[in-house]
Amino acid sequence: GEDVEQSLFLSVREGDSSVINCTYTDSSSTYLYWYKQEPGAGLQLLTYIFSNMDMKQDQRLTVLLNKKDKHLSLRIADTQTGDSAIYFCAESAYGGSQGNLIFGKGTKLSVKP
Amino acid sequence: ETGVTQSPTHLIKTRGQQVTLRCSSQSGHNTVSWYQQALGQGPQFIFQYYREEENGRGNFPPRFSGLQFPNYSSELNVNALELDDSALYLCASSSDGSNQPQHFGDGTRLSIL
Image 1 (cartoon, rainbow over the protein chains, first blue to last red):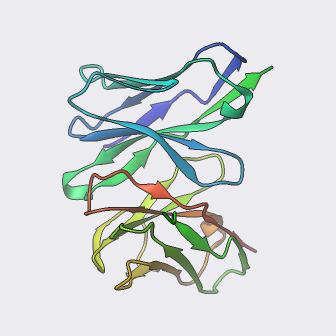
Image 2 (image 1 turned 90 degrees about the vertical axis):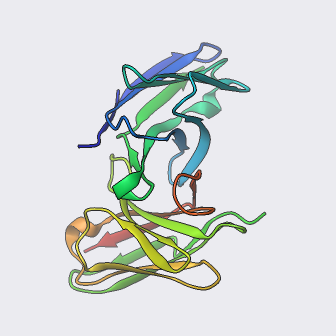
Image 3 (image 1 turned 180 degrees about the vertical axis):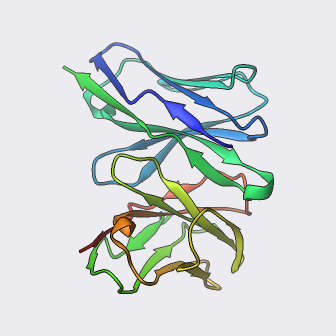
């Protein structure tokens, strides 16, 4: 079945780069997404990548996709304390699931000053 | 541009009661998806509405039902509430059906006593 897995915790120092990793199982996924959730809030769309791309860069964010290994990563350059949040990887399940998003359990990023 | 808004922000109910949660989609969006996020978990897809019709459903029982109105706003109804229904309910909107980026509201926190 469809499944998305992420490591649960990541701790970095302010100014360092953060790399959050994700693996997914549905090879038919068309898009893969990264969302950010701050305490008590909903999900903020950070970026997404089409499955025929290898990389996408958007300011401090770089997404890398290895479709062969079904591995997705999000790199945050020059991590700030305001980046502390939970980051969710999600794949879009197309076809029979009509485009719903399958989420991982989220990676809690802690940024130490 | 108005984002996705949900009401109420918090709600307390008791077992066996019924609840209605509301969502106004982002302007220009005609698709609304609902998700349930239990504490410490990623969001789980409940169903999606596209142009007032159900356009896909996750693994939730029939006591979870929904509606979409001509202005694309939506309701989630849950009957016969159970303790396990305690969660954050998230609404997301997107344009033109499946596989478009979904933008989330801040959710409704439902507590069942």
